[in-house]
Image 1 (spheres, one colour):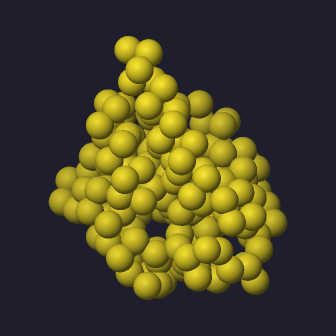
Image 2: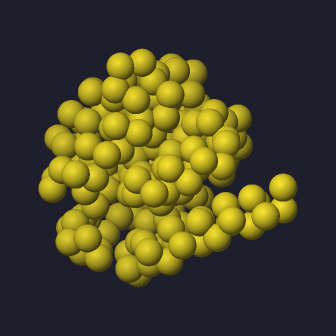
Length: 161
């Protein structure tokens, strides 16, 4: 078992037992994530809406959540806030996976507590390496550094506009 800076204890995962929860209302996106992550030996859990995603996250304790922002009902922002406010799920890293590519949306995702932001369309072959790198860095206690890097990337992009 490993404990990160947030006190969330999770098993130290190998590729065979890493679990990713994909919360997205679009079935083709969930399928794309599932096929590509499972091809790399990562177990995928799915939720078609925010409420179901919260329930699965609390029950299954995935290693990572891939979370769409724009969903009917409970949107991704609120799902992320609830995950991070709940003692059971507050340490689960969130990667926002969404078509909202505006700087303010990316900044909001990081500000809420997400650790990364992937915009649609995305290269599905990059998901498994992204998840593995994220988990490796979090296991080393680099959550704050990772978020800082993402914020620096955003600042750099804004300045280059």
